[in-house]
Image (cartoon, rainbow, N blue to C red; front, side, top):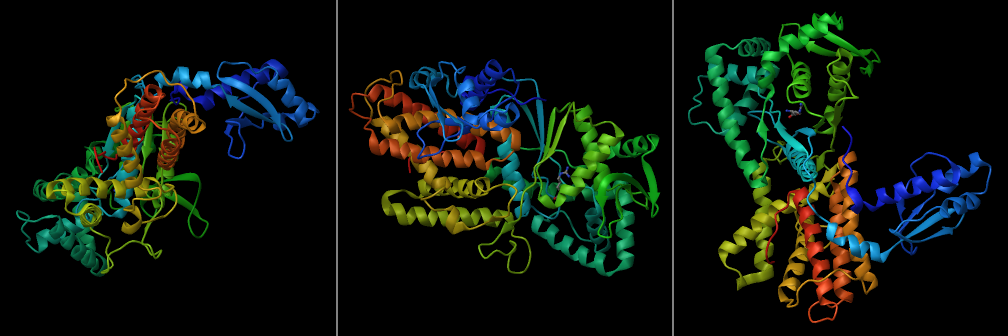
Length: 568
Ligand code: ARG
């Protein structure tokens, strides 16, 4: 699946295309030059170092090569090109072009036929979501929203852990202790899970019974299925509460969904001669994976007791996603700790032949740990991972306090309540999404709830400010015409959202949207410092510019899954 082209508003691509042609016309060389944004104090908008990279092979000076390329550049997008330093080509964009094409900004993308399947959130039943699942949920959902915006058909899959060893433990524990599931909630389940884990770790006989229980469950024994279903229902209620607050909507397709396909998947590996028996288990050996002792590390696809495991399910799931769901791109959003597991699964599927990288894109989008402000791994005092719903409630509570101290009596209770919920949830999402996905990230209520700096509230505040400016304007919007340098800067920034989106569709790093949003908010604030809107002669153009700016904000909020407010 190729990434979709973002059209004429993606200036970097347009410049790439223009300079590709110029290089070919000047030198008969085919390549796609890299185009970078210029940074102040440079006054150009973009630049390329293509001449420097070609000079050596051509046995010419970079400036000479630059001159040759530059003389072939001619396009209405470009106002002026110049040679700079050792051979850089500086590009200045045409103001007229930017003005004329502004009306094309933020037109909805056409729907396309490609399917993107994203596997995210995916908590384990009875264990409740923890901060790692919170990251997966937030990041996965943002990617889903981005691909939806781009017109793809998106499948949001919740691959919940509903079939593994933990069930064997839990069901055994419930049966043996004659526990009543009728009134149990998620907290009870977690209690029992914890207790069963202790038995499992300390009592070899219990461990054995639990493992047998997994096999009984997987072979559909009716009594056991009943208990299992009940556990699922209780867990689901707990998950749903969180998904509702976070406004995410996933299709639940847990590990158990693939149960009918596990045996045939293992059979396929056997038929292809890829299975070796090691320690009585069915294993697939893949190139490049070693254990701590540097011995080949196998992917176990069927355990010695005949039970299927996490890898079997993931192989069957991948096969199903490719063959039945007909996904063109499959993205797994999990913590970096699962990287090796997933890559082994991908490689095994490739070896087996049902995953062909030329046909389907399969990617892991890993993320780092969640840390406390003091750098320790995030857990509650008793050493357990935070209850997620409490974490969210805490953010909402703190947002409420901030609102009360900011606005005091001005606001009625209901409104404070409503705003606090939006601000609190936005803060949690934005803090996560504005961090570089692959790095560990520090969870700090104090920082995420600030009204200054790169925070959800600051960006939302800028958005609300534009709304209130527009409300005051009395003239009708007119064509966008640029008068002031910061006005030009704002217009250019609008185009650059396409570059951020384009990058994220390639590298799946949502912080680029947050970074962009912050830049946009700051650029808007500069504009507003320098340019009067209401009552100015330029009012009609500036109204249109601000309307487009609002749309850019809305795209960003949409991708990041943030809710907006009418006032703040
Ligand atoms: N349930 C797993 C966990 O909590 C995550 C599942 C990720 N998806 C997958 N297809 N393996 O660690």
